[in-house]
Image 1 (cartoon, helix red, strand yellow):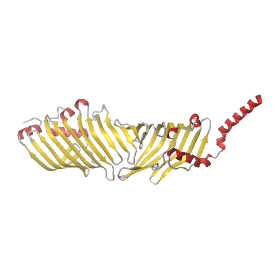
Image 2: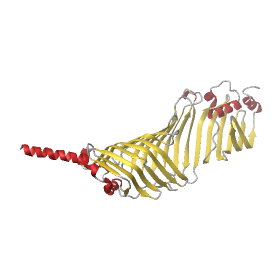
Image 3: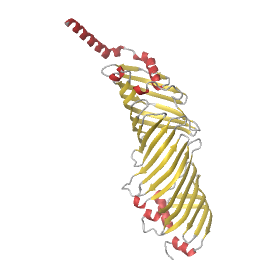
Image 4: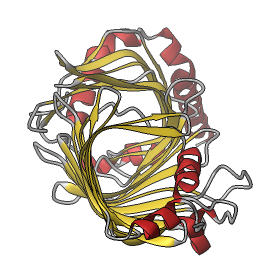
Length: 420
């Protein structure tokens, strides 16, 4: 009996010793094709492993592969190095659970056609096997990049680093990290539901490092030839002690695909609640070979006197100059498109401007006024077309103006700040 127990003990010791030191004497690189086949089964497309490979069995199963790639042409996936520590119990059940994993310099390239259809490295591949049997408790991503090849050009998001997790290959997924170049990093938080019938719910929060502005998306993402996001967009800047940094908030319903982004039911609030400017509207951005943005804003009433809250500003000219200073120089438009503003009443210099309508398009770094109309105090009806430009706090206009006045003294009184 003692001899039998001794033999079993020696066998166990030898087995453990072999598991500990055996891998050091095995040329695991010779087995990389077998591992590549297993990886191909997991993601549903052929995978190539071109670099060296390391394996350890105890105390925790561990594998490291170098030079992984999948796909061809403009749609590829690759990584310089992937390593993972695997849980033993799930392995015995035929499951793959990475308790800790790391992927170094992953690179993903995808192509977007003019109609918004997206082609990826896994496009057309078979459905990955054992979706539910693969999970990642903790995945560290180091210096990744995503390249989008579109009709308008080639766009690269680099420096993607952070921590991710996945309950299965169907999700839910989580990522907390950042992307972008040094000095302009974008803090990124992403969470999703489980993929169900080709769609999932997602929440995405973005914030540039060192800045107060935030951008949040919350909605459903449908995976199809043309993927579609349908949900809410919220962008905001909180109140600050800095006098020249007014808080603002924009909320809109958003429906977007790689070709078109549409915003509806826009609710834009600029400034503190007690004197805020509030606008509604809609927008459409086209992302094709010639990007363009159409923006339409409207409001029943906008009160510039209350917004500026400066009793020393008496005349309309002084208030307009102060508004230009408050909002900064009008940006030179970099996109084609159109901007329209429709305000039923505008409180300005102690009186009301009625039925303000402004239609503009960007032109040569400035703005072309296609149509401008309003009724000023004194029954002064104005219609104008021409070019609008900003230089510091002095807006300039050149074009045709049609002005008819029924009460000239009332108009002069308003323009002079109430003085006769």
